[in-house]
Image 1: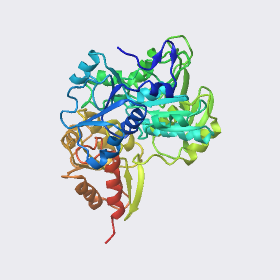
Image 2: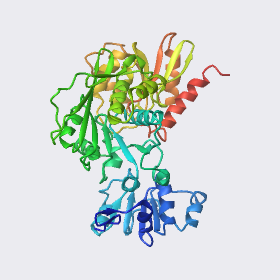
Image 3: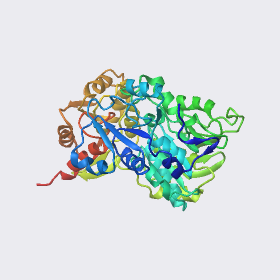
Length: 478
């Protein structure tokens, strides 16, 4: 197979890599946020670029790209005659798609926009993945670095493509990258510093099974060097097992226990421990951050701070961590306070696209809430959600494709008793929000925490969250 980017043992620099594309036939599969600037950059380097996308784009949308010499193949047959020399795959398309597999077997190089960024980045790359908490941990890591005066580039799965920013990066900067299982599955590089927040069932509509999903997450560790750093959740059995794959330094964090002092990496290095003691986060025997100083609620956010503190070991000071903790108000759509209306508090946690996320959100409140749940079915189990909903809600309002699964989980829980919680089923999100408003009484809390993806009704979880916020903010208007 051709190796476009390596010349002997010397890795070519960014401009050389792109100039080596000149005259190459390149396919860009998918034309989303990250692949658009990629296609422009490839065309600018003289590559013969063909964009292939299942969706149909308008002529006006494509005109500017066509003027750059970019060719488009759209619609159901977008992968037909896939014969380009280099294939940049968008994360949402599986690498074992028959046409892609055949092209690779014929000698094509399969890569991605994120792989090219990793190959070219001139600065320290911090990569964060996990089923839950990765966006908040990624954001916290970037906030702490900024507060310390470092140059920071934040992106990846969090929404901002980083490849176009490479020319602005210096060796002393940091790229903080959120990485999904889709992105990691075909990666052949690891970040300089990595975090796995946890691994629980998710995206089983895409992955063949849970084993494949776990393996995809673990890829973040597979290409580490001896000076790499891996940060792992000691409270999660899947991430604890990942300690066996660490090739450099390791940090483990726990909100439940103090990890044993004799933990070692496979190379024999002592593992640094971060844990809770006497209401504070400790790193080994050093007190780092009192929990009371963390502005955003919930034990899961305490763990997000632990992960960020771990991955920034030796980079930021305790004073910087404390300053961020006292000022950081959280990321939009993550237990985000919307407003108080008629004595009822409304919270938007639209990011909660799995049962474990919803369980964490519910644990952030000290009283029973009215929860709005349901959405697109990712083929993951919901049994685990039954007991938390029974114990932490006074009413559940269900809608979307997963409504029946969630209802079954509640009704079959040993903690359920007739009418506790009350269960309502609604045909859509508008009706669900109105039902929540109608049944809520002064002093109640209404929480949007779907435990499901959004794609049956919305483009993404952000659109779902904004829909909820708009409805709530319109309450009381004529």
